[in-house]
Amino acid sequence: MKQKTRIVLIGAGSREFARALVHDLVLEKPLHDVRALHVVMVDLDAVQLELMCGYARQCAQAVGAPVTFEATTDRRTALSGADFVLISVAVKRMELWEQDFRVPFAYGLQHTYGENGGPGAAFHALRNFQIVIPICRDVEEICPNAWVLNFTNPEARILTAMLTLTKVKAIGLCHGFYSFRRLVEKVLERPLSELDVRTAGMNHFYTYYRISERRGGRDLIPEFENRLEKNADRLPPLARYLWKTFGSLGYVSDEHVGEYVGFAHEFIEPLWPFGIEHRPVHPEEHGIDGRTMFEAWRRNVDVRTYITEDMQSKDKEILSAAGGIRREDIKQSGELAVPVITDMLLDRKGWRESVNVLNAGGFIENLDRDTAVELPATVDADGVHPDAVGRLPEGFASLIRQQQGVQRLLVQAYRERSRKLLLQALLIDPVAGGHARQVERMLDHMLKIQSEYLPQFS
Image 1 (cartoon, rainbow, N blue to C red):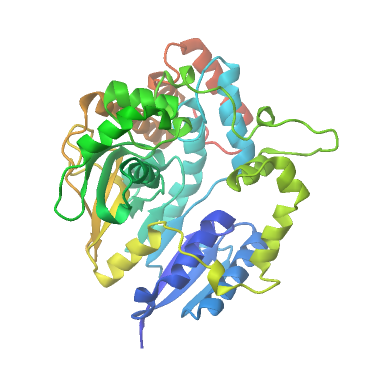
Image 2 (cartoon, rainbow, N blue to C red):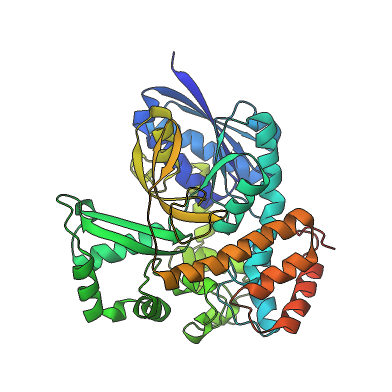
């Protein structure tokens, strides 16, 4: 009889998160050959949870995979006997995200995106501390040997909190590393299968330290930089500036990278990507919200097309498997969670391009050791073994160290419920620098309007 592995997905009502993991789990044949997988899907939204669980069972049947699924809203029951716990959670994601972005702007703080860095992201982090840390406490009590794989943003801040406030074994995962790899492939006009591309830094804020031929090891950084120099317009404005000024280039998304530097507003329009400012208002339309905008953006269509073609209903039909699920529609996502799980269970010593861990071993020499970093690692039965990266370019490392200070203060403020420390975290953030009175007014405003979702500070 095969040994059974219990995997718990917390936040499984999320279509994007759960669907990708379900596909990867039912397609992971090397694991199926030696392990029986039982997946417990957990969410507070019972209706959406049952929809996703039904979809998962249909996927397993379509593929013929020996994976069983169950759904429950009882997290503690789900965690009993868990070997792996995967977390992707949020509360009122779009509504609160819009506040995270617009309120700081109302107080004169010119930031970008408001998700992972800058003043808005402080509140995003605190709301998710409120959810994730209690989950980790349950893991400590119920399944202390389980590995926790976190997808919840802001990844660096959440993982730092998890690993400093609790005793769980945890790593963070994100697909942002693909952005730079796709750029290298295009610039060098060579398939990734021929290349060894390595990046390191912080989640969404990393740079390259190796680009070489996979066979032979020839250094391709000079060729990459020469080609890019001749066609630098392929980079968005802020990414191009950071590359030319700091010698750093990673996530090719100005919105994400811009969350970590104080001058991003000089390069990026101060708009919320999912707000009404991004679309014309048509006379016959009403009731368009940020979620609708986000779903249209995710499908790369305009909102009018998304609504008139009733894509939301079509999506529900697919999930409900009303017309049956075709094997060819079940594709691997490219996310690293299931490969990492397989590496651990089969002791594969798999090299993974990007994991988030504490820098406790000084893997990146010129970054602090008590906060989260992102870098490649080898994964086996003994856990996660990060690469020794060495030193990043000092100017870029200095920008990351500013963010590490914000991480520490946010975690300490949450632990002590200290408004003073929270204010310090906001004031040292380069995005809010130089606006002390406005930052404090903004802080009090956010603590008031989001009081239902935030810790109580004194």
